[in-house]
Image 1: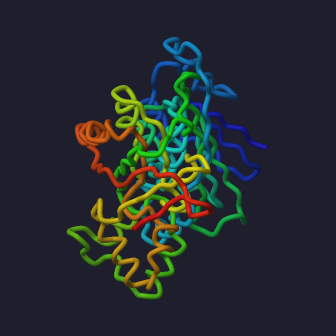
Image 2 (image 1 turned 180 degrees about the horizontal axis):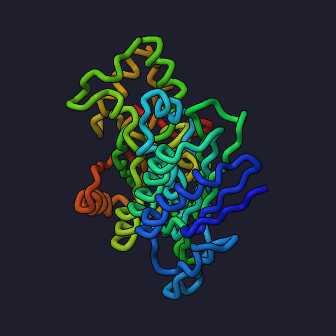
Amino acid sequence: MTDTTSASGLTYRDAGVDIDAGDALVENIKPLAKRTMREGVLAGIGGFGALFEIPKRYRNPVLVSGTDGVGTKLKLAFELNRHDTVGIDLVAMSVNDILVQGAEPLFFLDYFACGKLDVGVATQVIGGIARGCELAGCALIGGETAEMPGMYPDGEYDLAGFAVGAVEKDDIIDGSRIVAGDALIGIASSGAHSNGYSLIRRIVSHARLDLSADFDGRPLSEVILAPTRIYVRPILQLMQQIEVKGLAHITGGGLLENVPRILGRHLVAQIDRTAWKRPALFDLLQREGAVADAEMYRVFNCGIGMVAVVAAEHAEKAVAALYAAGEQAACIGTIGARSGNEAQTIIA
């Protein structure tokens, strides 16, 4: 078995690996990983494992970890030969998940698997991963590229990622302080993010949508493949200004299933569907796919990629702070007392 370790700490191991291609990829990755370096990195180069020291400014740190992939959004990337943004999606899915606990992402590792390594494609993908890490403020300190002949069709690959962050133990956000009367702040998504793409592909195929056609000033393909928004910097800034009682990353399950994950059983999220402008992409998908309203809110984020819960008196300040940080945000509802066994998210 071959075992080649890159100068960025990325290893390439597989019985059928092309060492020449692996070496070429290593040289391409070095400057990409270097741009993501930050305090705490002790050894991201050359060893069997990367080393990271929790920054000394933490008094009583708790580590928070998350892992995820990009899902069937990759299928569209293959069909369109667009590989430069799916790496951002990969990072976003994990760092946004650990962010909701109040954690600052510290470092990230990736796994890229393919049947035969295409250095150009892999460089584009990992370039996106590095860009995502830059946006999240975390270091890309390791990973692996596995070349496994016969496992994947030509031109296809799979991605997985793993993020670790830290939060002061007293500052963990777990939703336990949420009470009736609190406000729900919706933060805009950049599109469908990385969920619902099996349905999106079916709609595209069934309706024979022209992905090269203009859609709101851009090719429809670019709108559909827009990378997942990374909320780390604005949310960390918000937490320095007001108490954030809860955060929900709106992924698979949409608003209907993700917001209740941070609520006690006695509470309900009452969301006003008119409080934000739903992006035109979701109108297109609903119309061409004849998708019911409830299914839209269960499968897609429908324009809200993150929900924050704050005290009602802090709602305006929270929206203003998010706008100042470059986000589009709005108060989209309130927390109420739950009646019996009613659903914990009501969108009306």
